[in-house]
Structure formats: structure tokens, C-alpha cells
Image 1 (cartoon, rainbow, N blue to C red):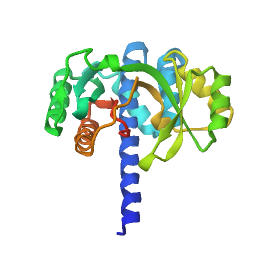
Image 2 (image 1 turned 180 degrees about the vertical axis):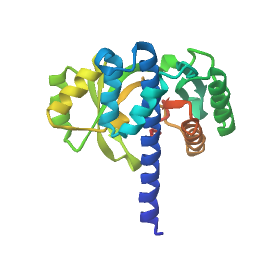
Image 3 (image 1 turned 120 degrees about the horizontal axis):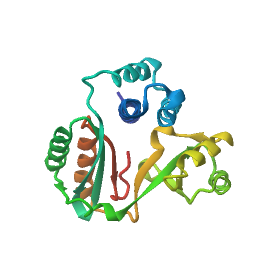
Image 4 (image 1 turned 60 degrees about the vertical axis):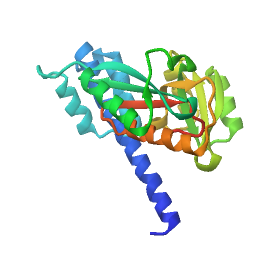
Length: 245
């Protein structure tokens, strides 16, 4: 396999892993919402919104149905949302979001992943203050002007470039408040713009990004990879410049 083919294969593998992580997260959210408000989306608005999100990222119907059924089983544990904070290399910070049915397991797995990669667990709140909770809608295939106009019409807060490998711009992130995320996303879709649903959602956006040297970047990249490999981890956020997933 040539260098170009290997690079393409590596990118495809990363995209497949990302899709699998998104599907897994939505599956858990189906169970959580159905247990809380019933398995009929007609009478459960939160569940209906999650199923809508599933269809947007092409989650197979059998996965949706299987998790709706799982929610009705007596031995199915409740899922809890848990956030873990960590220090990376070069003064950077990490936030790992989990939706888990076993908090002790997730805490152990997250700690192991971070320490083995060269990071350190942080006390609650010691990293979080460097981030803001917001909605992110990633728009691809449109010019900056088109996205800016759509964002202004939708009532979004800001638009920033989404950088890919080697600093190339692969799209634009439309930033919103948590409350306005769904309405802004739907408005942009109605305008006919393409939204990358796998990379859109509620996230912790860094207030500032930190540039680090190559050695620190490699450690931070290892932390990110190990955290994403943990089943209970649904999303990872960092303020290390150039490190995205």
C-alpha cells in the first residue's frame, strides 16, 4: 500500500471508529430516555429527538429497536452522565464525557487510559473552567460567506473554521447556546446546507487553545486515542491546539 493509500485508509478507519462511537452513544441515550419517559416516541419528546438524531447519522433501525426493547427489561441498569477532567502535556486540559451504567467501571477505565498515556487526573472543576458548554453545528461543502449568512439568519453566536490535517479548512463550526442548538441545526438544514451530524452536538469548547511542542502533542494525542477507546467514553474535549476528533 502506497503512502497516499495508507493515509486514506487511516482516515477512513478513524471516520468509521468515530461513527461507531456516535452510534454507541445514541444507543445508550435511547435506553436512558425510554426508561425515563416510556418507549413510545409519540409520547416522549426527548426520545423522539434522539431517534431523529439516530436517523440523521444513519443508525440502523434494528439497533434503534433493540435498544428500545432493552429499556423495558427489568435487569437493565440506569445510565448516568459523568464527566471526568484530566491534565495533558504542556499545560493542556481534557474533559471526558461518559454515559455509563457502571460509574465505578468508567472511573477506573478513564483513569487507566489517562495515566498510561502520560496524563494525570484532575480535581472536579480544575479543568472545566477553561471551557464553555455550547452547541456546535459543523457545516461542510459551503463557503464561509454562505455559512456566515445562514448562521446570522438562524440566530447563532459565532462561526469558526474547522481545521483538518495540515491546517486545511474542512468546514465551518456554527456555535450556539445549548438551548438553541437543535433549532439552529434544523434551520441550517432547511436552507439546504450540508451538516456533519457525527461532528455536531453539545460540546465543551475551549476558551483558548494552547500550542504545544511535538513531544507534548504526541502525549496528548495518545491521551485522546486511549480515552476514545474506552467504551463508556462518548466524547473527549481538549484545549490542545490542532488536536480534534
